Length: 313
Image 1 (cartoon, helix red, strand yellow):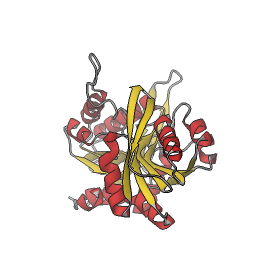
Image 2: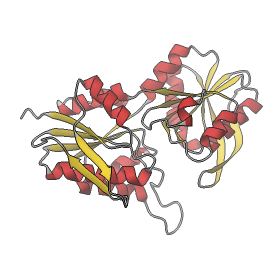
Image 3: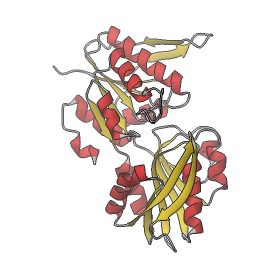
Image 4: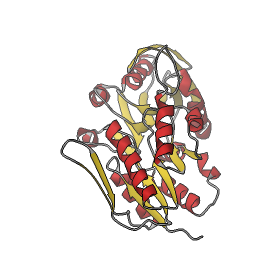
């Protein structure tokens, strides 16, 4: 069956959804996503989707719970409107940091959210740079997990930074940093970090040589920016010539923007999986790259039942 492709969006990141539609030569699907005066979310699909292959673009970013509930209700509305297949396109998957029981009597919230998305009616999920790759296994539907690495690599390569050292801000990010360094033919260093509590980190030691080098700190997300700013200062204290940072998800909550502005970071390269808002757009150190072509190509291949494995690199 030649199913019609339709793309819808919630209120979390409509600009990215429009960019994806532009890449695909599509119009964004008509839907009303609003709320009642008490904050209760209201959704109405304003066009026929019967038998269509539907993609819902919605990052679960700030306000996280509203964005998540919008996604669930949009999926339910599409399911009840007889869409043939519904794919949840979640560029940034919130709750991804709560992927295991790291202390007694805590939930595995990432699994709960995965169950909610499946139960709402999503037939598959397309996401990017999960905080932990094993979260794919939390879903009972197929998951296509993309990486922003090619987008970041293209930008950094064009900058032609000399004496580059890629630095992982913690042990958990070593695999990501190693892959990045290998593509750039750069050296690798690791920061030994001891986390003292949620959103709190203390830099302990740098494993590797950054003396006189250009340093690129690489992470999947920047939340309060404590880790990245402390890491940048530690590299500068060890004699780094200049310090950059790159990440996929610019969460930038709490004091993040103030910390980045006052830091020794020359530039922080992020993607538009999460939109920059207000003062973030005016911050001279923040540079945003678009992942719309990557997501758009994945959507096209999924719709046409083609392989997407070449996009996972």
